[in-house]
Length: 373
Image (cartoon, rainbow, N blue to C red; front, side):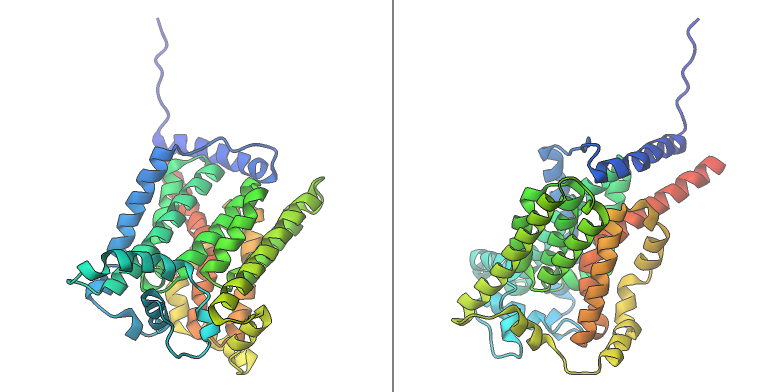
């Protein structure tokens, strides 16, 4: 007689998959094992379309419920609306905002294509929503790919992407007339390229991030250098990877200078941009305002504590660079006296990582409870 094969319960199957994924994560990140999980192009397109439509739904209130340009903490949306129209009206620090051309430039394409045909909603707001949804959906797909690469579990990967998209910052900042969706995408792309050891793509990431927002340049430099110190400084090819990182930083700085120099007709140096951002207030008092403002905790009220609880599931080659760069963003926020809006750049840096951490934590917790039951 043949022995009857009894399948393992789903919870035990997940634990085995998760344990094997956790075991292989260190090998994958350190380069001893090549990634084995790849998404076919058809699945990537389906996921992107799904996330794009979800983002349109999350951003729908900006079309019918409220005007982002008049909402607290979203006044920068006025500048981006002007950029979609092709002009930048009189405003302090115009040299800073004018170089953030990635998302407004994409929105301008939509506005020139469909703007004259739209009557039921504001065409500028719709164009910005379409552009931001494109980049948010791309971030979601990239998070699915890197999460599946690290865990080998499609369920965890999808859960991480959904947590990212429904977190406070995405519908209330990135899909509300602002341009943070571009910086978030390229910060996650930078982390993915370093984890997957795709050095030759780092320069392209540097150019794209600099077109999205000027703060990407120092953030990317700190993130990449921290990664190199944590993961690569004793490797045999450490100077090769350091060279690619230096090339990325050089190209991002050159892009920053070139875009603003073309727009204003004279060279705009990075330190001039930094000086324009200085609020001239007391640093310590500004730092306290950043952390005590309630709008900061709207973003991280559940994402930060749960993400910290599950942070051991995140490779150190991701968590340490993210932590160092978040500290830099906090200090820069105090320098600029950003108040609670400092949560925006911090989320751009660590939002995807924290979503991944929470997804792994909750999935393991539920699986362990099912096994105990």
